[in-house]
Length: 463
Image 1: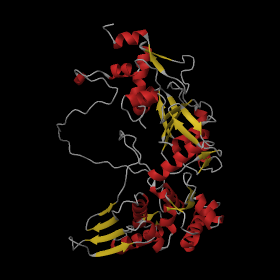
Image 2 (image 1 turned 45 degrees about the vertical axis):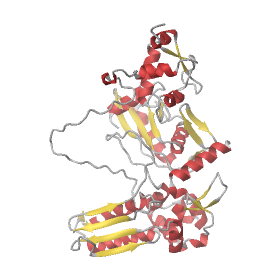
Image 3 (image 1 turned 120 degrees about the horizontal axis):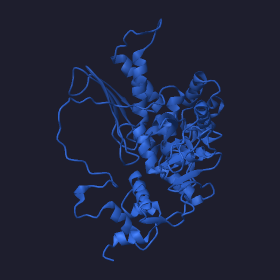
Image 4 (image 1 turned 180 degrees about the vertical axis):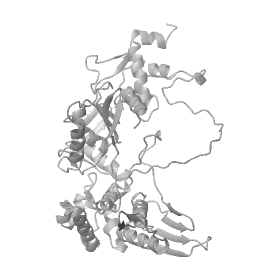
């Protein structure tokens, strides 16, 4: 994250997807509750080294290394965050102070912190462990938004291939000593990997779509996803059709094997030394290409995934659905994981990395004529002639009633509380046009805003 973007975030204030923690000398005890809540809701950005009002406090230089270590260890610990979610904080310098910024994605899973489940709203983090309806809604939203979580209660354990589960168990044992999967039986491993779940709306429990796709017998895979297919195509001489093809309709582990075999068959492996040891560049490059083709895919979409080898390039095609809509910032954009449970199995087997992929497209230095973009909501625009300003719209929304920020956003047609709305509210507070309903508790979850006499006069100047 750039210092400029961080400064803008701090000025925008806390909200549904933004939280500040002082953390000057050590980590706050409740930061893991916030991380859990972000994972369970829309994701968010956690800034360590900032006060609740956005002032830069900074992190003591001697505490930085220990904080980073504590974060890494705790987020890998299922006793704290379950299932674990490895995240890497980014250090940003601002006003001569060091801050840590943690970008937390929305997860496909429901996470707990210290055995409790937390959710997020505009006012903070809330423990919903004992609220059956809220829990059911959370689990249902995860299952609808992430198709890999769909439960198939009639798939039995013997419908899966035990040899493939054993392959994962053997592989993780070789990759990392002490990996808990190495000593679990088949059902325990599936539950640990979130491939066996419970539907808290219907009460059904069983193998998820992700579990069936990874370990199912072929008839099970095609029974769950009848259109499941991955195409490996060689198109060098016959450009209209193909020179060679593998039509793959099997589980994801063997799909990976067959795609890699197709690559090895048709792409040369250049000689390359690391020190005095030869390494396979082909293996390193296409391991990531193939793994990501299988991981980042919407399996409910009938469009087949494709790996196409041509004379001068290799390309892949995939289907997908966005998990959210909103403003993309090129300087800090990170992809949302599409099938985190499937991705975790691939990572544990060292077939995929915890990576972020960025694409830079170089354009020729030509002068382009484009229309001026529409301003972000909250930015004053002289082109608004005749239309009431955002300030007037906000004041009008408060006429006759006191509202919180979330309700203000809804009244103004916004999908959520934005940084622009936070800035406008702060400006109107400073200008004396609106006031707190709870002036002694500015950060209370019950806080609302109402017009002052000056605000009413500004809204109705004829009065």
